[in-house]
Length: 208
Image: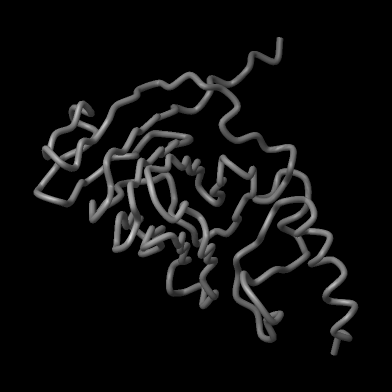
């Protein structure tokens, strides 16, 4: 059995890089989130720091959801049904989601992928849950939003990765909300607006 301190050192190094791996393993470290060092830190893997997120401010498509008036400028990408939005993310590489929340007290937003993974804002807390088969503990930040007034926060999604744009921190797991098929958004209390930036895969470079 690997000594606890030996297991902690690579985990701490991973934390210092700002990259967090949400996974399930037999003897998780104490605290949140679950952290491991292994193949996922190699070049080209999920938590590879060389993989860029939000590399450009440009969007292939951009639009807004106005929860208060039940309106959206997103065309066929988003279908609104009351306080629920169905978001089509098929064919995309990256999605940037910016939310405006005022005086957070209740459930402001829940974003769920087709795999059951989710991201929620409730009160001031950000709650990120991997799909059930991962058996991973959630990542939670209880002070993600300010206590009063209005706050903008941006989350960037790629399949296998999620970035908290304000801090640059990444969460990485095969079981996070993927940029695939469709998402469901529950639009709740205190949510003033949602801005969506859709980015398509970049064309492959000509080797010649």
